[in-house]
Length: 223
Image 1: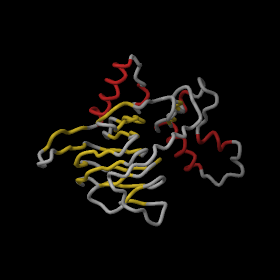
Image 2 (image 1 turned 45 degrees about the vertical axis):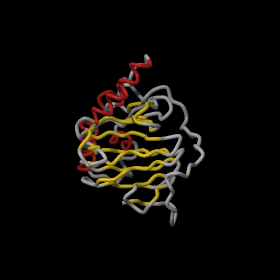
Image 3 (image 1 turned 30 degrees about the vertical axis):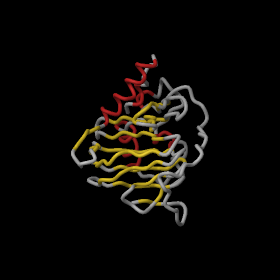
């Protein structure tokens, strides 16, 4: 399923190249900022519980005691929010051919991971099958699948359901953020299984690159 911000997009031939588009990174930040849960509030006075934020207007609030109890319970057991700087907290590393990956999240409980994929020139990723749901948000350029008639452009959103098999084309200068759950199976030209990759396979690529370059991996990407 592809949701486009434009009414229609022409199919981009694989030989047609686009000029790479410059990155437009968000404001710099020195590290990932984790909003601590309520039990660490004393160490970080800027962090507040949801129930505390409503306390000053308790007389005017329509919240019941039951509502406030639920808020307190949520504050106690929920996970903290996480902020990742696209520019400073992660990096690009090679994957295959001209395709590069930038990891944004590794989540081991569900086997989900979030990566940005880009290429400076037209590139194909071989036929593969998803064993879990994949969603994609297009940041720049154009990309599509050989088997489908749509072309995704900047701002477009795509959902890929488990079991689908397709062949990815990335136009020059394309940059897409993928959220992937489960494994990916890659096939040879004769449709035999070549390789299976999951969250740990992709994380290993990042760690190997950091080791090669003498860079300390960002352990806070595991959340």
